[in-house]
Structure formats: C-alpha cells, structure tokens
Amino acid sequence: MDYKQAGVDIEEGSRAVGKYREHSAKTLNLSVLNRIGSFAGMYTLKDYLTMEEPVLVSGTDGVGTKLEIAFKMNKFDTVGIDCVAMCVNDVMCHGAKPLFFLDYIACGKLDADVAGEIVKGVAAGCRETGCALLGGETAEMPGFYDAGKYDIAGFSVGIVDRKKIINGSKICEGDILLGLASSGPHSNGYSLIRKVIPDLNEDFGGMPIGMTLLEPTRLYAKPLLNLMEIISIHGMAHITGGGFYENIPRMFHNDPLQSASSMSAVINEWSWTIPPIFARIAAGCYSAGSSGPMAQKLGATLIKNDNALKNQMFSTFNMGIGFVIAIAPDDVKHALGYLNGMGFPAWEIGFVETASGTHAEKTGLRFV
Image (cartoon, rainbow, N blue to C red):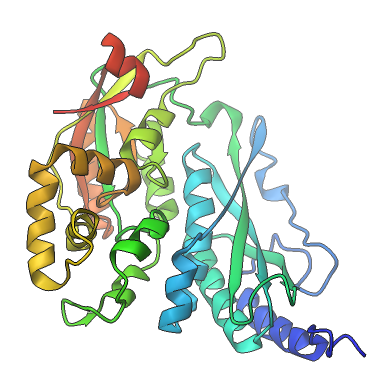
C-alpha cells in the first residue's frame, strides 16, 4: 500500500498548490519577501517603522456550518471571502490595517478544483481588504473528514500605532451609533438556518434561496480605514455570532479593575432596513413548514410583534447590520455621507448612555 491508496493524493495536492500560487500572486505587494511554496511566509514591516509604537493585532476564525450549504449548492468561492471577512473585520475593530492573511483547509479527499475555488475566494477577500495572502495549509485527512467535505479557518494580522488603537476608552455618553449594512446573515447562525430552511432550492426572489444564503460576508476594512483619517471613531463592533446583544457591548472599554463597563448602547428599533432573508428565517423559526413569499411576509410581522422571537433573532443574527461604530454627534452627517457615497449603506441606529439598572449592567444594550 502507498500513500495514495491510504487516501492522500500527493499529485492532487501539488495541483492544488499551483492554483493557490496563482491566486495568491494577485494579492502580493512589495512587503512580501517570498512566495507560496516556502516553509513560512515573510513580511517586512519597514514601511511602518515611522510609527511610535507599532502594535500587531491578530484574529482567527472560520466559516462554520455555512460550508454545508456551499457543498449542497456546489459553490465554493464565496466561503473563502467569508473566511477573510470574519478575521479581518475583527482586527478592524481595533483600528488596525490588515497586513497579511493565512488560511487552513482540511478535507477528507482533496479535489484541487474545489480547493482552488475556495482559495480563489480567499484571494478576492485579501485583495479587497488590501492584505497579502501570505501562505496556508491544506490537510487531507481520509477517514477523519467525509469525502467531499471541507473545513476552512483563517488567520489575519494587522498593525496600528499604539496611540491610535481603538479600544472603546474614548466612548462617552451621547456618542452616536452608526450601523453599516450587512449583506445577509454573513457567516453566523447557519446551524439554525439549515434547520429552518431545509429546501435550498426554494424560490427566493427569483433565485434558489441557497444562493442567497451564500452571499459572502461584507468586508469593511477599506471604508473604515479611510473614515478613520477623516473623523475620530471612538469604538467599533463586528456583529457576528451572538448578534446585537453580545457584540455591541464588546466595543466598550474593558477595564480589568471593573466588573462591567459604565457605558450601555441604546438601539432605535426599525431605524434601518432589515433584509428580507431575515424575515424568511424568522418564519422558519416560528413554523418549520413555512416557505415562499407568504413565509417572508409572516416573518416580517413576527419580528415586529413577537418579542420572544425578536429577541432570538437579535441574539443570533446581525439583522442587517454587519458593523457598528461609535462617533461624536458632530461627525454623524459627514460619516453617513462618506459611507453611503462609498457604497456602504449606513444608518444612525442608536446612541450611548451611562449604564444604569440591572438590565443595562448585565447586557450593555437595550432597544427603544
């Protein structure tokens, strides 16, 4: 028996690496000192030596069970974008410029064409965020993963001058919260979505709903890095797993000597446009047999009138807001004009208040 008979195809691995190298080359810049194929990636920081105290900011994440929908729809490029977004958007929360990205792909039986499509998406996400795809790993593990199944994780590193780190310490009472539009559920809540929307070929606005569910996570790095040069951003939150309730309070300054932040977010209900896909998900949560246009209409009504379901939706999904920033009231008009002009729809969705009462101290967020 040889390695191929054991389930690992070295030749297919080499073919996959050839595809990776082609996609990665489109993301490289002069700071990258070598190419894919070395034992490690190298990135020079010489362009950042003018910073008083450069700080590296890192993040890692995966795509989760959204991958199952990619398998069933036989579409793999968008999940690569998701992987980049989940990492880079987190790093952006502290004002760091993305430098480079690495990926890890695991599978039961490697198909170079499928893996190549995944990395094609990774490279597209890297190009959009201005970071280099510096390297990665593909692990073929027969008997551990089922044939045809893939998992992907990513690792992002950014840089920021210490004096410019955004950690919520500048947030004060009266700051305005702006919400930037998401492209859909992004990469969160799919274990629930797969249960409540079992038929991925269900018609949704003239296309299979499975394709809508594969819409990639939005990348916010470029517009926010540019906005930081124009106004002072006091805090930022990437709305991922845990929805509004878990993620918005994370932007407030975490003083290790305090048990809770002194700040709390107040969210104005219905101050932004909630994408129709969330109404369809809500209908499925309410009634497993719901489907089609009637389900979407039912879900829209339920989100507004069923408090238990509304809380579940806002605790699980981004509900159309993928990123939140806290800024001074005087900067709102300028920021909204800039973001909308850049093609990133944004709304004034709330404000910051001093935490008071048991509910605010526990959650750091309330709706009005």
